[in-house]
Amino acid sequence: MCIWYKSIQALVEEIDRCIKAKDDEALTLRHLSETLGYSEFYVSRKFSEIAGMILKEYLNGRRLAFALKEVRDTQKGLLDIALDYGFSSQEAFTRAFGKAYGMTPGGYRKEPAPVVLRTAIRPFDCYLTGTGGKDMKKTAHEVKTYFVTIPAHKFLHIRNYESIGYWDFWEKQSHIPGQDCETICGLLDSIPDKPDDAGGEEANSGSGQVMAYINEPTGRLCSWGIPLAEAYGVRLPADYAGPVPEQMQLMDVPEGEYIVFEHGPFSFQTENAQVEAAIEQAMQAFDYEKSGYEPDLTQGRVFYFFHDEKRFWKYVRPVRRVK
Image (tube, rainbow, N blue to C red; front, side):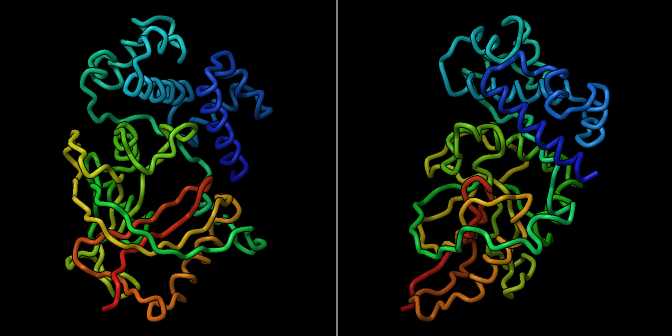
């Protein structure tokens, strides 16, 4: 079964590649099945089994997600956008857009509002399959440690005071209406001007979204003995004045100093576990006394966790100078 999860992951990546290349002819079940070497019926069945939706539904959702970004961020004609993303006419595009987002493309362009985009699924998950770097050779990157000053910004997020780790966080959020992973990630994808968004190839794929830990006296005690609330969201400019989805919080984060523990690009499928262990070890071994800094445990300070296999894995922890 693990092989099929990897195969569907490859199919998901091929779909995004074709959409970005505007290669509509390749976005057919026949072509996609040929890339895997199986029959159309078998690929369609396995996709539905693993993804929880039919391939056509997923494909249309991804096309609309990329099209929405062009409606929002460019002045390109709506007809041109429609044809670029596989719609037969502007009218067909408007109908699909309205059904998905409850407004017309023109109306959205005039007044963008947070909507739930169809984010790229990740069928292969090394956490759930028990793979991801156990007993693998050493990665090519070491963990770098350095200090940075991060300007004031806003953090748009949801938070949980009881969860323990990423997967427990989303398990608990899934029981709260409108706060499941798919809905929250889709909403965050539709919000522009995220400073952490890689843009380009990563657009509409969860780029710019981060896990965070907030120093909160009512939060759960973490392994360091510090009460923390876990959160998931996006950083936004300090002057952000756009809409805030009703299930999210927008907090001001003042300028501050941080220590960064960073590992370079890695393979999520084969190196994830060892990279995580290397960073944890680096954080535990760091000698704060010699650095002239100490962890800043002030209520409301935010500890960011960035996980992007193509760029880096890093923890960004608030600190303050020792007087």
